[in-house]
Amino acid sequence: MSRSLAWGYEPGGGGDWGTGRALGVPAPPQVPPGARAPAVPAARATSPARRPGAPGLPVASGSGLRRFPQALIVGVKKGGTRALLEFLRLHPDVRALGSEPHFFDRCYDRGLAWYRSLMPRTLDGQITMEKTPSYFVTQEAPRRIHSMSPDTKLIVVVRNPVTRAISDYAQTLSKTPGLPSFRALAFRHGLGPVDTAWSAIRIGLYAQHLENWLRYFPLSHFLFVSGERLVSDPAGEVGRVQDFLGLKRVVTDKHFYFNATKGFPCLKKAQGSSRPRCLGKSKGRPHPRVPQAVVQRLQDFYRPFNRKFYQMTSQDFGWD
Image 1 (cartoon, rainbow, N blue to C red):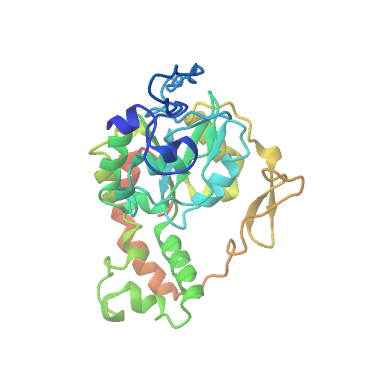
Image 2: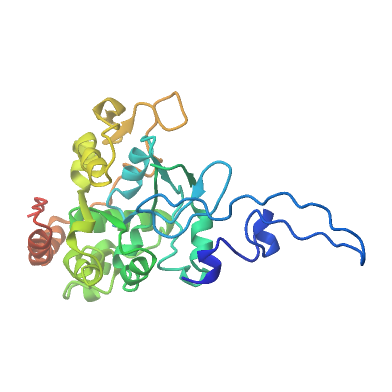
């Protein structure tokens, strides 16, 4: 760890951090030659106590500390990561970054001090989290996260890779109306073998991605959440996550109701609101019609990868 991280020092930024001084230490006054220097008040402590198990040294503040995340939702895209994060934010001991920082895949060169500066302030006993689903499929992400803290807890929300790919395509199609058909993208030249170079297909090779992560983290550091059960039984899946994080089961079935129109669970009382709330307008977006023959080919393609993933995780997700 660099000296700047170890001693709460960071050039640039706002407040005391913008002066290039250790936090809370005032600059010495300029004293004319022969004059007596005025008394300087005692500086605030520059190294607050670190909460056991929290990676890195936190940055001091009057309303908590900015800490590196102790837990990350690392995947997968269109698996249900946003829903899980919003559900967890109902817990008083979870503080999560609302946006996806993409630090370990796109912004790593900005440094750990920058990453930590993004985090919400937490009190002792609270958990800092963030979610960036693309981490799971980024080759360098596990090594970089392990370098930050080998104790990081990793949550992966997975979903049937065929329906996940179709959902991924639907999202892209909503932003790019002239996109070729799903079939044309899923198979080479529209008729050949499955095209694993297409990200919508490649993301669903969960076993291959997990092998990369297991080079750096033991399986005990992972929790695999079923995207399907997150819809059908949100309280049950969120309960598993709370257990994994060492939290009391505060978020329960009393927090959810099922919205039949959207086909998704909604929050009876969202964080910071007295009114019920469903997730964004894109949740429950209609999927384009994909021929059953295309779906069947993809199910056959993914089957061996799914079974290997079941073996690796000791969980049968029921996709086959």
